[in-house]
Image (tube, rainbow, N blue to C red):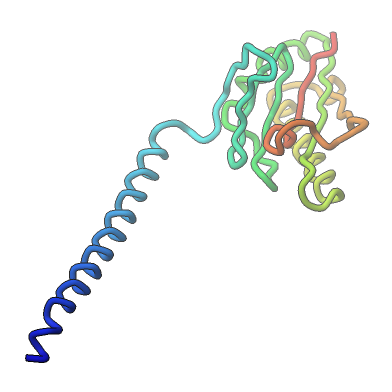
Length: 170
């Protein structure tokens, strides 16, 4: 009779274990499908026109470029200095202005997290990356000015602070 008393308990434990395993498998499969869908939805780095100043949405993990009132703003992923795809398209007006005799001022900013010396060097490397893209597009180095801002720590959210700005000086 003792073995018959344990059967209902064993069934309950078996059902709970099987349900838990099925739930874990479904969760893993669902997460995989969700990630696969997200990768196809849109490229991580894109060119965005921001018609309203201050209404810029920047991802903490992706590079992007925004043209805001004639200022080209490159946003960078944490710890990275790679430009977003579409950088040259966003710089088209600045490139034409430089070829027409205007100067371009390139300034790098960083967020407030981590080592300040490392961040300052990373901001400089990001500015160099933008400068190199401009030179590669045919802009004369004499038309470019790398300008270290008085305060290199950018304002706003960390993702918005990690940026390089290109300003046309006519």
